[in-house]
Image (cartoon, rainbow, N blue to C red; front, side, top):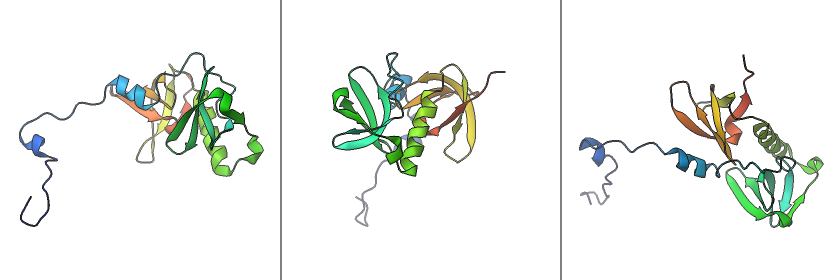
Length: 162
């Protein structure tokens, strides 16, 4: 502890000593953070539907034969057994929930292998090659060679070839 009773944390000690910066996350870590690869057997009819999976309600992000991933609030996803899911009528949705469902449907329609626009953290837009879709987002290759992992809500649209 320092003399003022505060503890000095070694947050930057490694930088002064010539240590290297921490390495960027590996692609496998990025895939896991985005829920894993987008399954080939996805039930496209369920994606973007608003459902009740007791005790939660939310938008379906991913669905296969046995499980459904339901976004119950921003950044919170619950994986539930498909047998526990009941589809709700879109008429019942608030404007916010309609927007969430629209974001999910738009992302689901984006094909991998195409250039795509996305929202940057600064509020602008950028573009990259959508190299892999995951359950909750995508991996994009930027023109400078970096690969970024983005949540589906930051994806805007694919760019028409040509």
